[in-house]
Length: 240
Ligand SMILES: Nc1ncnc2c1ncn2[C@@H]1O[C@H](COP(=O)(O)OP(=O)(O)OP(=O)(O)O)[C@@H](O)[C@H]1O
Image 1 (cartoon, rainbow, N blue to C red):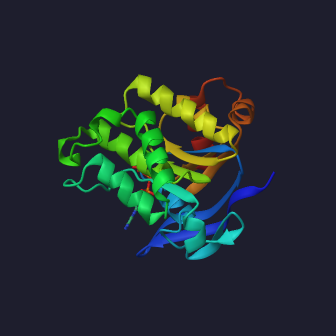
Image 2: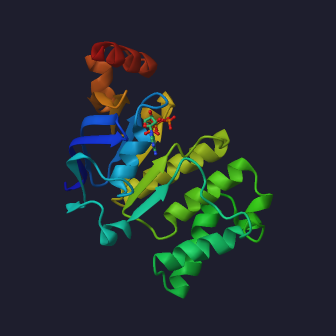
């Protein structure tokens, strides 16, 4: 199987502060990869580097074998940021059309995709409302729909299920599994260990450094525990 994402010895600084050091990451096409770590660990910085929104001081990031940042590859990526970058005065539908046109979707395809993603995130009935009238959870759902509108090969989700109710959370995970079956690649950041366990492979980060990598099963074996919270605690202890 081909590699969708490769990070080699990546170092990232903001000003004088090193926020990532020696980060290695390899994600196979068609895999769901989880990035786990406490607040400030560097998860968002890693996904921004993958999406080409930041560049490393050292090392490199390849997506679909192209060095990032790369405009062509960007067309194949769907990115859902942690804070919703939405326009309060536009409706949900206007957002989806705007982003669909940025990705150069043709009219027929655009309408089909908008129907599909709106239904997926339960926003069909609310598409004609302005975002200023949306709740926090609705904004999150619209952000997810936007990330999916152009049917990306690589989907990057930064804490997508925060503020989402349990039923929709399960629906979102069903969709992630379906996308995986189609051969699409997903990178997801989370604090929640039950989500981590649903991933094919995991990278644990702390203070900008890798503390563990592997499948959920491998990590539980290495740290001799069935409890994923404990895996994380024990991996963090090794780092000190
Ligand atoms: N634009 C920026 N300028 C300066 N420092 C930044 C910037 N973005 C992030 N940082 C710092 O980089 C470190 C890693 O932040 P990052 O957002 O990647 O962590 P995170 O693991 O995603 O955290 P959280 O789970 O809270 O979102 C933090 O110390 C943060 O303060």
